[in-house]
Length: 513
Image 1 (cartoon, rainbow, N blue to C red):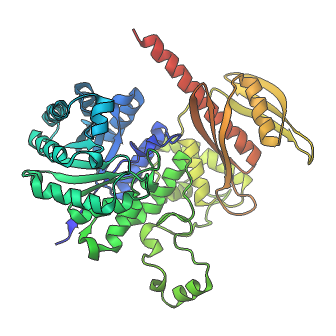
Image 2 (image 1 turned 135 degrees about the horizontal axis):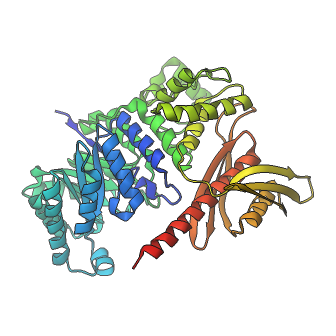
């Protein structure tokens, strides 16, 4: 009989740890709601002890998102576990996920403790977590580089202490599918109480093997896979949720397993994550890339026309690929806009709709037709709660072939406006130089990109920038039919993030005794 595989989504925790991928509170809530529509089994909402903001976002998700189990991460420390429980306790199905490093390099170099000391820490804190909630997950961090005998011991001990899920992480993406399968089978055969817990895997993609390793674990008997939308995560990322789910579905003959994920919501969720994080999905990305179901070669086109199965193993509609409808424009009403947003996975209140519709009308006045991609950009802007220290009031650029560009920029801060002129090697460089003169903040531009996010000659251009100053970096995004304006707004978005982060750092320093 086919086994159900639990899908544990950690986009909001591990996925958000991708450098520059931080989301606002509203974006996290919107994504959590969409993950519930996707019907994942577990949402790892964050690491509550790591910051007051993370605690608040996990707490709000626990209170406002229904359906999936809501999980928080905690180190094997009493204060972490208590903070985690306080954040998730209002969820209908709360889970504490605690972890500690178990590989030789973690024991000796990072923790500087003996194997026996770490095992005792793990047992004590799993017991503490189990006294607070019945659903406890334990991860021996860097399990795939951990001595196998020690791994068996710590798995057995933490199950005995009350862990109901044991996660086997390939924390640095080091293992191979055959070693992963061997390891999981070894645990099933040699841990006497293993039937009292669900065995899970959490694989990173440093060698591009995260999905293969996760599927090998499923083949060996694992009942949960930890993954992220679009494969977001530390370094090279995590196992991709969409690839895991569709592999199990498409090759059910191999795995004799299934998930309860609503696959028609996959593309919608992927686009939301891409929009919120500013990380575009590569065109040839499996399942969710724009080219995933496109055929250009004549032989392929002819084959698909004759029978789709000649060159397609999945139906594009099964994962949510549908053509954007050109149904919205300057005369579209509020109800029509709200319904289309609902179709795209966004739930908005009446109060939010007033602001969103005003933004929609402003956008529609510049464009004859509004595409789904436009609405996603609009929603991202509308749900960003970050206070603006500086905002763009006026912009003029003069650029001539063979000569340096000149920009005049006026910025608004509170009730005052400030204007400067600057020159640069191109219009964007000149604009950024003028902004630096006004704000008196010197930054380095680490990355800059501009792309069209919709179709037609009036398409929105989305600018994404990464800037750094004093060892801190931030990513900024903005979209406009004017790419220079989008570039300026994206730079200000990143700059405001840096300034707010700096101010919070000063407050924390003042609060420290």
